[in-house]
Length: 577
Image (tube, rainbow, N blue to C red; front, side, top):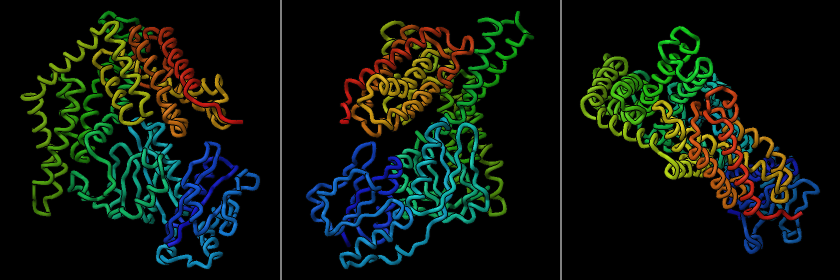
């Protein structure tokens, strides 16, 4: 096995540089050799080896455009192969073989791997809110597959539904199914196909590595069709599961009800005043919109949360028991806490029943449509009404009362915590925990945490965009240009717009974003700003009564943005011209 080193640098942009490196890395691995990589781009130099290691290299590949400015003085001329990026994209394996042939070394000690044909991959990406991570993961998978020489078709299950949907023929022809999702994805159509499941974060971080891992570890998906309530054990070693994923699946299906209900209530207040729900306004448009928002959309919020938590755990037979439990949670006053409890109880109850109930083959079809929904609904319903419903309702009442009674310093502390959580991992588990907590309280009449969370979530990309203008010397030309898109994402409450900057300099960017987001959250809570809509960014401010103190809310967002920008100017170093 040869020790190879490669330097990738493309003037077409940083994405090309990274794709160059990934293509060479994958080709060397397929040929059975070890390769260490250095990528040079406008993001800086990502070191993959030291000068001492370089001196011991069997061969060095320099894949760079003419005029890329790579210093060749430290490279071993007798072991150096220079190629254009186009040669790597055309046939990376041939480039590796050329480097080894110059030394008279065997090119392919693993001929079986070298001869492996390109894969036909179908993939699905999905995240709880169905916005940034869904499409970032899809783009990363497409680039990773291209770098590795594979064909890929990615279906995105975002907030507007499935896009670029997989056809039955595409699935039938596929060699590998890859699911990069933070929510439960229906896998029934992939029965018998080799399937691997991971998170969107894994795809965004290193799609090429994820594809390689999927190729090695994927296992045939055993869909039991109408007779199974849960995924077959061991169907995918990489499958991400557990309570967090189940909760996020429920949240992803709950959010449309919360968004629609909150905005309809805000519109009702705008048309009929703050007491539009009184009988005196009965029959008016405002009163009717309030009924649709508060009595229909909000009423379905907790059942949807519970039903799809159960679906994530037990597949389709869990939906009915979960929704029944969620409806009862609302009936007894247990709110979203009761809905979460009902969803988990229903899901695991149905999963357990499916494993333990054994019927003759001819009667197996009765399980998912009759026995499992019937018994699951009975179990969760009785438990909600007779055991856990009222204690959880008491806890929910205490929590709601505590939050409604928060004043001055305690409210500021909550705002600081929520703000810091929203900026801590830019759409990751910490961010989602703060977001779910805030959205779930809207239906209970506590809308101030939602205002703090959304203000804080807008600050990181906005603060970075402002810093690129105030402290241009701290950012390169590409970062300054990309800040325009980051600003738009920030205005739309898509915190993930800050991720590219965080990835390049996390130790400086994350603290700056946390400081600004905590400032925005604290000010929002201090001023008692309440927000009825859990998404939409500044665009919901145009709806009357969606926010109770529009000017103060805007001031909180501006203050947080300025704090982040100033912190970045202080923390980041100037870039040498």
